[in-house]
Length: 267
Image (cartoon, rainbow, N blue to C red; front, top):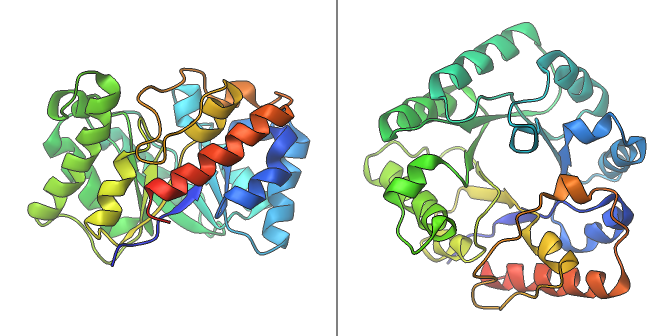
């Protein structure tokens, strides 16, 4: 029997309350706290209502992780269920150094520590993965490594990212590096059809994923197929739509797409 992957789709502030319907847990981008107090308060309220909240260091949105001292301060004040320790894009060794520095400098922060895997080659990714496997509570793997473009199969970058992460995880398992005793989180996605593979192959400790894809697509008037989602991906990031006032038609698209996303996950 396949595993159940918990999903969260980042959403504009105007529909955060609606997102409680389609999200299994709530996913917060830390850099948005600084300008949007109502965004911060939503997650504070979620925690009071016993929902899980994952706090991201916003590396995908900013190009580098949010300032460590300010990030630690927000972890301390929000007290999220999980938080992603500041990492360095595609640099496994700098990411390990960042992880060590952060946990030594900010001891006793509340919440489960998520370690993100980074690197440009298989060996570097494995070294970083093995460190996170030994030191983090939860392991995160991104969707858009340049490594996937080389190893993945497909007609374009989106398809190669999609199959590349599948192949990377499968290789970790075959080579004996995959830690079956720790939960894993999949950061973002290129194409929704990717996730069906993990369910069908019972990679049962992939516990969660996040992607704003169904939401951004819905805002742009795109509707999912129940079999695979979309063949393309909107280029705009959800963080750039955070103040967007979602219309009724867009909301209908979002409800439809998030339902189809769960269908792709065999849910």
